[in-house]
Image (cartoon, rainbow, N blue to C red; front, side, top):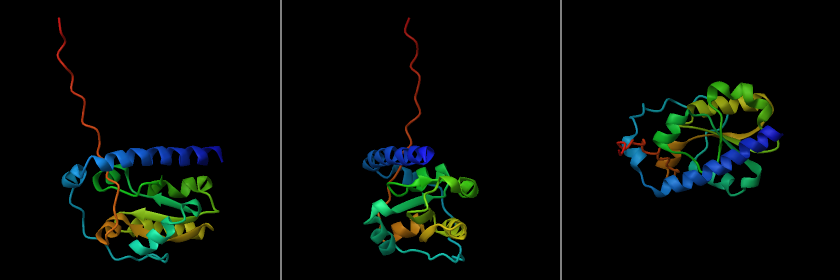
Length: 160
């Protein structure tokens, strides 16, 4: 339980830095690498639309969003303001840290990996509302939180 609280606290702190990054503009979007066309959704779990996610977000106390993307995808594309980040390849090993009392939405770029993650969680007894892709959410009019990585520090010449 202590590790879960630490993860949730970290997610809340992370969300405040996302809000700051969102105010800094869309520079990350301009520098984002081209994404391949989304594959057909093949999972058993429902693929959510923007309206579905927005309705779930209206009750944040009962919701847990698990983003299964890599950190570089989060910075290149953006994401939702609050989430638990567990990469798809690590999800099965982290099941003990995920609360079973919350409704879960899994997130990836176009819902492919999120659907696989949702099916895995459902198979382990979690309450899963479905999966969504952040790029699909954005194309339906949803706003993503953009993450702008800090500029590299330059060293100044030493003064003598």
